[in-house]
Image (cartoon, rainbow, N blue to C red; front, side):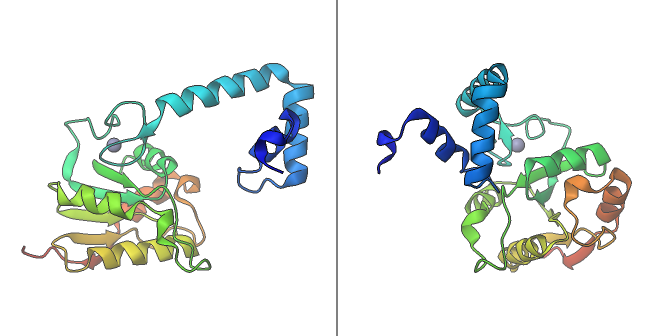
Amino acid sequence: MSNKNLDAYSQLIQALRILPNVGAKTAQRMAHVLLQQNREGAEKLAQALDNALKQVHNCALCNTFCEDELCYLCADKQRDKTRLMIVHMPADVVAMELARCHDGLYFVLMGYVNPTQNMDLSQIALDKLVARLSASTVSEIIIATSFTAEGDATAYIVSELLKEQPYKVSRLARGMPLGSELEYVDAGTLAQAVYERQLLQENKEM
Ligand SMILES: [Zn+2]
């Protein structure tokens, strides 16, 4: 049965299933909340989704979500443009900014490399990272991926990409709890992991 033959209720349930960890049962419960219990909330959700789809896109430099061509951090002339921190998600940028331990710029991969799924590189914005680095004044790169299997795999792929490149490269210190996502680590621990970052490769002459 093609999509256009489904009634609106079934289409909603099918659409909800694009969300992570939402199967048929959860999608049905969600549809019940939206259509039966909280139609006002559902209107707000529909409006917010519509607005976000029209207004939010990726920053031309760091790839995070923003509404202008550049995000507020990339547009800030006070930031140290020689230091670039590579993170998974926009939430990681927020966590780092709260920890006040990095005054350079960021690059947001927008995903993780999953070692149990054939290291699928299409899940991270490697091409954009290469383009970002080719037109920049970056000399030091800090790989700030999480200390999970996905974070380790992502850090490996990025460090391999940067090999033979003239950057000083480091990764966050292992002081962070194993299995932790950056956004759930407290600011003090995060700052310490940045200050004690582990050198992966020295700055090379071009
Ligand atoms: Zn940006």
